[in-house]
Length: 359
Ligand code: NAD
Image (cartoon, rainbow, N blue to C red; front, side, top):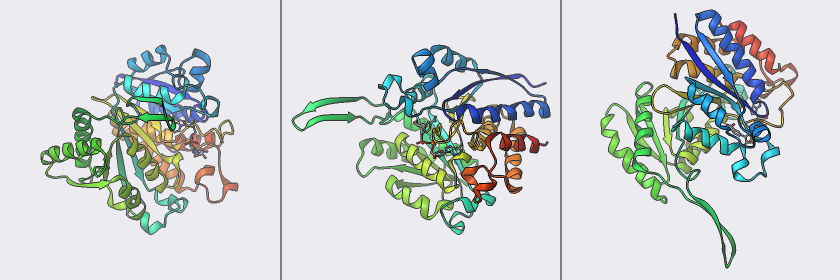
């Protein structure tokens, strides 16, 4: 008899609650198929928490996440909160929760589904065989460095500082080498070592660690070049490891290789098996409330949770195969449909995937 896994659920804003509802159906179906027990608890996070509790990350939400074995997050943000001061912005909650839960890496797989090649803006022959993972450092760098403004003779000046220490680089680089070992054994470390001091420290640290992984082939690529190579030769990448801001940008670029941001899952991991799982996309305010969001990224985030946090490999495979079968049968939400008039909605897509889940 499997032990009960506690899952903290943060639906968030915009399409967040819509896609989370479909992922919850997948959890229930997994309980039926495998006899697993999931105890789910849900709480406010992001813009809705600002409206109701006056802060994007209320203490009780954080406590709930700390009690859980894993967290499932929808998405946060929207124009309503865009002009708020920093402490009252949904993204501040996102940065805060990652820090408070000790999540230091974000893992984003970008895999080409054969039946969706036509949805990408790249030529199918360029995409053929693309299967890569971006491992992004999450707790350091320019997003967390000191920020301030000051008056100068040339008007106001704004400063964002980028800081990294050796320990922060070491733990993410070890994790990336270990992931590469379970795959095609190629690691691409991305930096801007020709101009940034943090990047020079990053590269030195990668080079010092590399001899511990002689079976993994290592290359260093400058971030601007990497942005180009991802479009030119995406299938040549296996695991890409990089710092926070570069990873933010490159993983969105990698996302577009697959045709739709609505298909991409992600995991944020710390030490041990605890993780926070969420779709790569945001709250999509432009389509929120219409019932047309693609729930696949969130559903695949559940599969990733099963594999990385719970070691439920078979249950993860069952979800991934169900998604593949539903897509192969020709079902599409609007974002991935060639013929938009035949697109199905969020709930219909969720129901089809649940119905296709078989052991
Ligand atoms: P977005 O990902 O929300 O949307 C970008 C485009 O992709 C939009 O046209 C949207 O309709 C479409 N899209 C996204 N997810 C989709 C889905 N599941 N199905 C179909 N189409 C989908 O990015 P954005 O517009 O830059 O940001 C909107 C808000 O989300 C902002 O407030 C931003 O700060 C926030 N955001 C939150 C997160 C997060 O919660 N982790 C991540 C990124 C952006």
